[in-house]
Length: 262
Image 1 (spheres, helix red, strand yellow):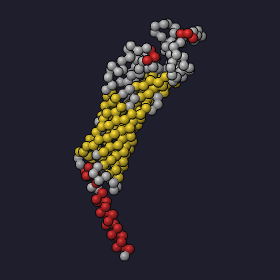
Image 2 (tube, one colour):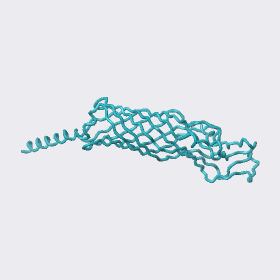
Image 3 (cartoon, helix red, strand yellow):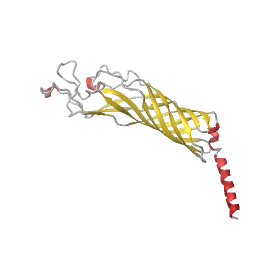
Image 4 (cartoon, helix red, strand yellow):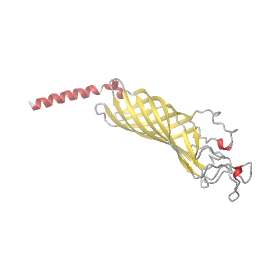
């Protein structure tokens, strides 16, 4: 009797598993399929400073005077954004796909400049003239780098075997991005020294690694994915101004949480 119950249970379980394999319309068996995605993005910089980064920035119009005080620190904090895009999936086999996921992302980046006090320009050390200072409204001083990126990521997805309606995977790849923020918005040629922007290169190449899970429903597949990316080269556009000059290199780092629907 017990053996018969076990046999019936095994038959029912195998029948359910076979039916589950058909969920999501057999999307994994298609040579090419499409989908769409939504992203939450956390963006920051990895900062490399010049050896003399602490030095105050000299005023080019008044010899012996300075635009900024000496620096205590420069750092970046995570700034959040979002993105949306499409999925183009090429099946290589049961356990591998090539993924092309072009999208549009909106994620500003933040830089912070911390000075000893809220004073601004200095005279030469030892010859203070307080009346020549220009006060900073905030300390640390915040510089926002706005960006609207068109991303073209290409990745290799290595998948586990499907277990019922679940599959895990690892992703690695490369991403080309171009910033479409207008040049007019970043034009600071008429700004005061303390109102200058830190500018980035418009074209960025990054490497990416990530993990995710394919979750199969009756008519579609949903995939939560966590991915890290960092620019391969510095994204800093060098300029001789108070906020770019102390920086040697800036590498852009993103952590992305994505939801894919296929």
